[in-house]
Image (cartoon, rainbow, N blue to C red; front, side, top):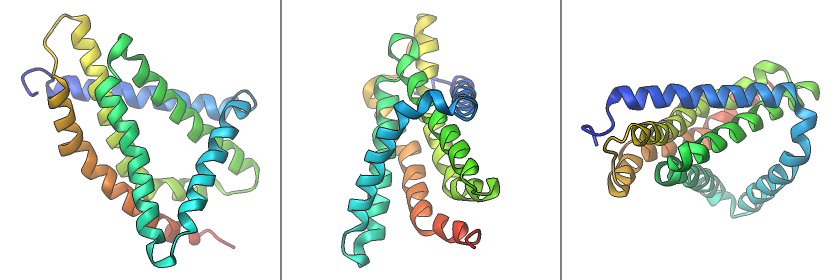
Length: 193
């Protein structure tokens, strides 16, 4: 894949992914009333799935929750790596924008409900510093492939892209899921009254 997608292409794709996510976050913060009808049903489904995971045997709940988070994030990354580049990378842009909007929307909602902004950041930062770059790498690859296709240049095949997913993105997502379940709650607890 190195001779098809260079570090420059991947870096440019990473930065583009970061910008799309950031724009989505700003939109979610600025216009929560617009996004509330679209996001609340998805958030409720996600919370219900997490609650079912937490109802498991207490000794297995952390492992199950880590697996749930990892598989959710891996499915997003796999979609980005395999299909994110099609139709001028619209799937990648959509996934990044929606996830950014979700973060901005939640931040605004929780801060307005009285959560200190530092507590919100503490709830995202420990695992987010690993998880978000992993997603940006997957999306960055999709954006780089879309750009190379527009230039009619060679791009990596599905097997090469899946190799990138397994070698680069997956270990980061495993680490992020573990941090999210075992470390993030301890960081958040420092902000509890």
